[in-house]
Length: 200
Image (cartoon, rainbow, N blue to C red):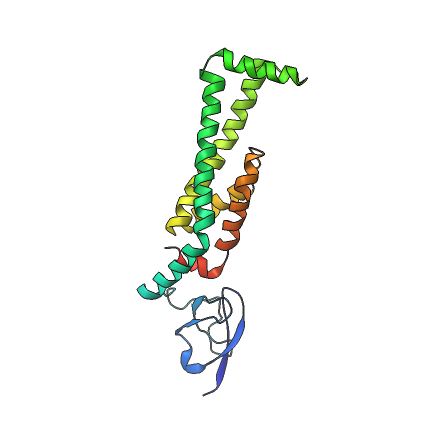
């Protein structure tokens, strides 16, 4: 039987496959993605056109894929979950301190700034905290939700969005230096085709 040239739709790797495999589920040897083989010759469907619904992985194969994905994502996922939760609680605590705990704590902070030679008043400090909290809370909430979905291998787009927001977080320096590497790590792993397939 003659071989047919096929292309993996995930990584665009070209390979030759026997014609009897056309229309069947195959695995790319390079990126390990599963796809339906279509030849590039005349009368064949192009690789980007789907003639049938995308095949789903079998239970045992999906379980192995999810086990590998969980192993690759557990450290950044747990780290995102813990750091985002702590920073969320810290920001809410600071918001409460600045806006609901009375004037004494804020005046102490203003006095500390004055001793450092930084003139700032109570209202400016409260406004700064309000703006910072308004920006920080959605970022940390996204990191928290993303960390949960990274660990559960559910809702790929939420896991990816939370990882990206965690990776580009510049809201709370130096706290962001602790959480940014976790977001970068998670984002890089999530872009792998085999990891993407593990999400249900």
